[in-house]
Structures are given as structure tokens and as C-alpha cells.
Image 1: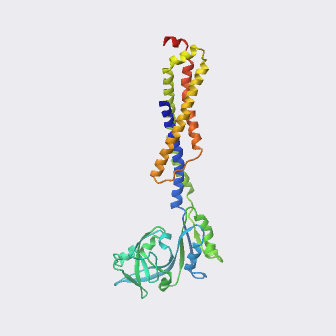
Image 2 (image 1 turned 120 degrees about the horizontal axis):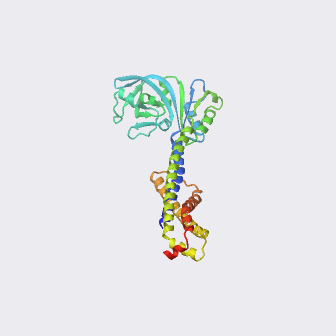
Image 3 (image 1 turned 90 degrees about the horizontal axis):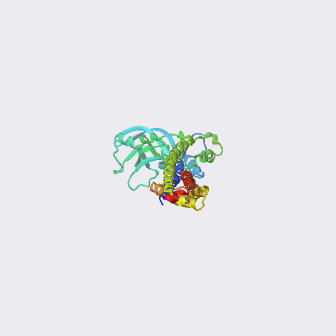
Length: 358
């Protein structure tokens, strides 16, 4: 039983390493896909095009792989007034899901619908502070070019457009009062691993007659960094497996040799009744093979359970290679046979006269 346990421990370490290496690789790829290569943007000048930002958003939403999209048109600077306080800042007209597409953190007024409508405005939090607005509980209003807008949201931060924390967002239909349109930015968030596909199609989808008029930006997939992270994790796990395998080999060799020493009288008796040295060596090897197979199966089960507990505990998706099962059993067999070499030689050297002395 002790020999089977030794093999099972060594094989379970191998299974854990293979399982974690595969699951970690999938997790790393998933993490990269979830955070990187999902932001596509397109810009154009509003003058001279025959489509509106509203139409651009609708067309972009029809491209496969698009998750969220918003258009921000630059309307230049305007004077924003609140209860005697005034600041000149950039005004943007927005269409679409501006919060998700720009990866912004927004504090909404209670009871609002989390989307800009006509007559409503969003202020950058830093701009609101400069204007003396401490919050949205009092339903504040601002004035731009003589027209009043209810402030329904404060932009705390924006990962893609940090400047929004100090600017004003209005519905596109309202923003025209601030000035003629300038540059329009189309912010798109794609589904995982879809950015390249969306980036290749978005210009034609938005402006099929003059796609070259749009400047499309697609982030480069950080393949090198991804492979470096995956390779580093796997190298550590493989090194750990090699060390555990070496320890298992030494431990099992010592255990088998000790077992042979304890059975010298048995082997001497077998020699006395006619057993050849080769037969004794094969007997030890056969017993070791049986131990290896049983230990391999036990190690496979233990290792798979350990991988399941670890991955589920960390909310990962467990990934097992089907080749892991035969590899585990064959590894247990190979480990046991290699460990039995010294014991088989010792058994073959037992003399028949030893049975008489013992």
C-alpha cells in the first residue's frame, strides 16, 4: 500500500501540473481577451459626409462582434453657467451607449434612465466641482447658449476618454446649439477576440461610399506578452513536476529496495526450488508494474480532483487534455519500473543458501 501511495503522489503532482498548465493557459487567454483587443475607434470630420452620428451608430451596431457603440461629436467650447458660476469647456454631442463604449464611471441622478435624452446633460465630475455642484440630489440645471439642461449624471472617470471628466455631454440633437460639428469619434467595444474583424469592417459599414474618409484604430493583440506569461507559468509548473518526479523516483527506489531486503528469505527459497535469477528480477518488475498502474490510476483521480477544487475555487474553467489519462497511467508505470531496477538486481543476487540460514 505504501508503494502505491508513493506512485500515486508522484503521478497526482504530474496530473495537477498538466491540468493547471492547460487551465492556466486558457485563463490567461481568457483574461487577455476580456481586457485587451476589444476597443475599436473610428474618427472623421463631420463636414462633407452624408451621414449623421445617429446613422453611424445604427450602422456600427449591425457589424458582427460589436458589443457597445457610441458617437461623440466635438462641438467646440461653450460657456457653461450654473447659479452665477461660469466655465468655458468643450461640449460633446453623444449618441448610443456612451458609458459602456467609453468605459466610463458615471454617477446617475436617482430615478434617471441612465441614458441621455433631449434636455439632459452629463458633466465631468471635475467640471461640476469647479461650478460648485456637490451632487445631483437637488436636480441641478446648467445653461449653455441660453438653453437650460437638467444634469442627470456626473462622469467620474473614463478609461478611453479621460478628458470627459472635465467636459459636457449633451444629446446630439441638443449639442448643435454649442456650435458646428467638428471631429466625430466612434467608440466601439467588441466581444472578446473580435476587434480585428470589427476593425476591418467598420469603415465600410459606416460609410460604404467613402470608407477611406474614416480613420480606424484597432489595438494590436499583445501576442508576445501573452505567450511570455503563459510560458513563464508553464515553466514553473514543469520545474515543480520534475522535482516531484525525482523525489518520487528516489523514494520509491528506496522503498522497493527495502521491500526486497525484507523478502530475502522468500527469494532464497525460490532460488532453492529452482527459480532463475532472471525470474526473480521479472517478479520484482511485475510487482512494480502492478504498483505503478494502480498508483497511476489513483494519482490520476487525486490530481483531477485537486485541479477541479483549485480552478472552481478561483472561478476558473477547468480544462483537461484527454491525453492526460494515458499519460498519468504510463507515467506511474514508468516510474515504478525505473524504481524497481535496483530492487530487481538485489533480488537476482540472492543465493539459495540464504533460505537455509534464515
